[in-house]
Image (cartoon, rainbow, N blue to C red; front, side):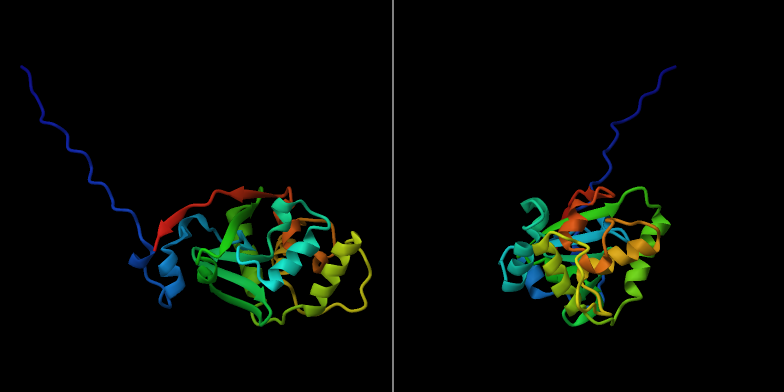
Length: 216
């Protein structure tokens, strides 16, 4: 006795996911919708590092990149800003206005190159604690004196160079560096206030995460 079955229908294909199909606390900015792409939130885990390079070459980014170029190759010196990922589209960053929590939209306009890094051999819980400790610094002042000390140490080529004054605030790369220190990961054996984005780009204790983009 024989039996036969009909053709097996393939499973329906899911349409490509678009960020506009998801729910966000605030509307997606117009500049992001115009660019029409953004980093896939699924690849950004709590505790990841988001490095930013400015394609428009603003005055601030040029000064930071030029200072880092004294000690680092272009592939590391090009990053002028660092933000801590909270998971998905959420980030925590130190700006001139102080440490704030927000979404990543400012960097999804096509004006920036991006790089994602993740601490090697850190557990999911440890990476989550990086994001947590960074978030506890929200509303902390920006470390303007630390920025001057950092620039001086890069020009002199001495990360242990003495400075006249250190700020109680933090700069962007210091925010991530100190959060990692609190869970036991020393990404570079230098003072936290002398850590720049290029140090984080070069650190062998971190690994790159492949970028993936989605339609907006």
